[in-house]
Length: 302
Image (cartoon, rainbow, N blue to C red):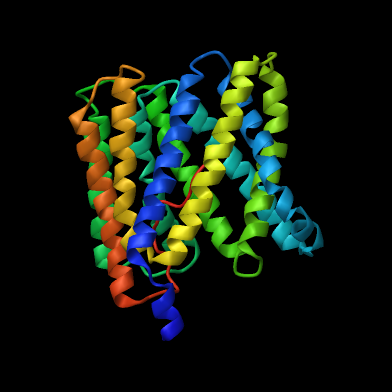
């Protein structure tokens, strides 16, 4: 009990999640700054190739870990699913505003909740179903079909969140037998491998500026994952989850001030509704202390 109390640091957890969210928003803005100077698939490959540099400290552990055929298969499937998510996300960044990308990415934990019920046998209680319905209403508010044009970027962003949810569920299965650092390292390695043929098909010589931007993207992505992990160690997801709402605020401000994107109150409203639903589910699971369940979080990231 003393150890648990010592590890429970809600203010520290909220601050660390704030830093993580800020890192992810900066990462997103850097990708947005590339504009159309590079094919999204090539940009995604270079970002993950640079990301492998940050995995070098875990390389010995990865090589020493014995993997079964089932685990190798799951890593391969996850690599394909996550690579698809990455390609769709990079494409979405060239099509729709920062705030819309951020708001629609909040749907990932909702897909995780549905997937855990369908494929992992977790119970889908009435409160979870109601929260999912609220989140779907949030998506409709953002897209407003019939009242605005739905661009290909909106469709691919929905696919991004769905694919990230699938990647997260496979990771949940893998971490039951493997260390999280090994699972993360393998994800980056497999995604890079899967992206190679797609990148070759669209390859053009990148400029030094683009390479520099993509190295920063990999750096901020790694930083975001690191601080997010520390945040989740310091406090439950029910405490840190609401802080992720700030990502939508930063993305909206950056989009308006840096990229001259119009502030859409409907996008903010829809994103708020989605995150509120996800936070409610996380809070309810914390109250019930059902730690065996896949508590939704904003954790699945690129």
